[in-house]
Image 1: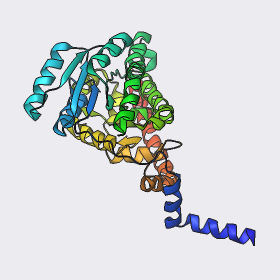
Image 2: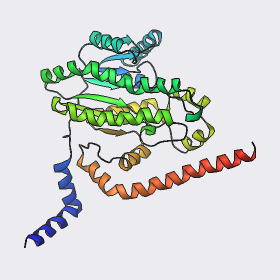
Image 3: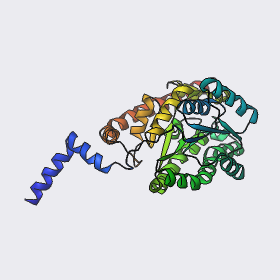
Image 4: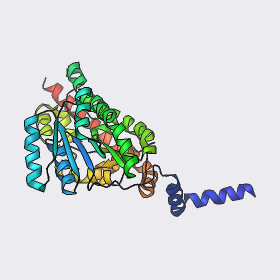
Length: 329
């Protein structure tokens, strides 16, 4: 009898409705809405590209916005652009995220943060054999260590703020689709971005009891000044592989990112390919949405097959490129 009851239970669970019910119970952390209006949103890399687009969008939603970047003149230009677009003023802070003391001073001047967006980042696409270790350290120091500096400096006041207001807060970390899958020429950059996933997963465990939600944002190639510089020196093989994927405008990435932050989502893809990558790499990542968890569960097998198809294509590109160029060497 016990075996029959267990079999019945299993049959119920494997039906779509039963599976959804189980996932609704299992999904963690619980879904939350993170409001922006009237709250302090602090954005790094805010003087251009995605950061500037995020700051403009947040200001339009009534947030009190602070932006941080290294160049004071570009910060002032960004402030003027945001004011012209939204009628709202923003606070600006000039600091290098590699400098922990400067980051702590900036956050102390800015005041308690409700939504911290770690949007800073640099990249140089190059085969590792050709890349100087100083360039590797530069990317790791900014992309990864700079994020540690920001979170460490912001956390105490953020925790106090959530206790005071009773409202959920957010720490959003800008990664990249190169932080979900390795790509030729992105050995150092991908390593610095993959590390952010481990940071975010562990951090979410540590701060959920303080009502702080972590979001990892994974944009594709985005039309920014940084991408323009990268493409000047990117290996040809990297350009061929990257050229098969659609890019995005900074404003569109900012819209997707803000929607993900407001909904408290841990993984925030920015386009259809990103959504497929999110399913393919979901693994043990937190998931607050039972519906998305359902898609991850039923899509895991097909996405693995599709992933093998992509890898077949990429390895074929690499093999063909090297075969062609060896003939002309």
